[in-house]
Length: 138
Image 1 (cartoon, rainbow, N blue to C red):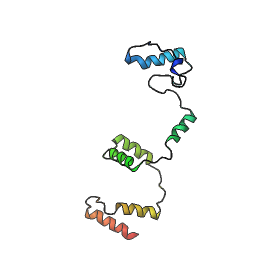
Image 2 (cartoon, one colour):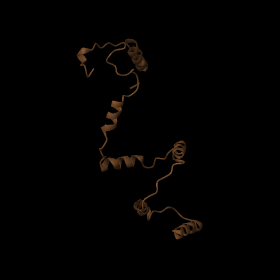
Image 3 (tube, rainbow, N blue to C red):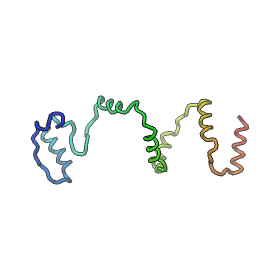
Image 4 (cartoon, one colour):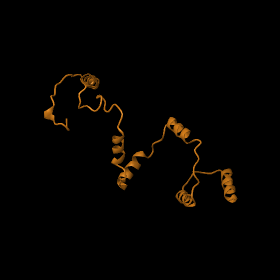
């Protein structure tokens, strides 16, 4: 209606039960086959998305970075969330068998610097001994 103008359409009330409106919309569109409808109606889009439309969706926000304020809000909203057992299993299954590429010395240094000073919890004497031995082998 926005594209062709409201004055070019005739609006009639054909259904009044709010529970059945989506079903009725799909029914009327399929029976009347109007040339203006791009979808089957009802609860939003039904049918394949064209490659051009996919490209437009993909390009919409590409190259735009969030402000530091927005990043902070997203971070705050996601903190404290835990993944369900099922979700963790799916992640585990996906990652099993994948080989990681070797880390550069620069990356190792960055990780080391980030972890330095972090309290990783109490360590048993046996654990400390294993760490010490592994570091002596290098």
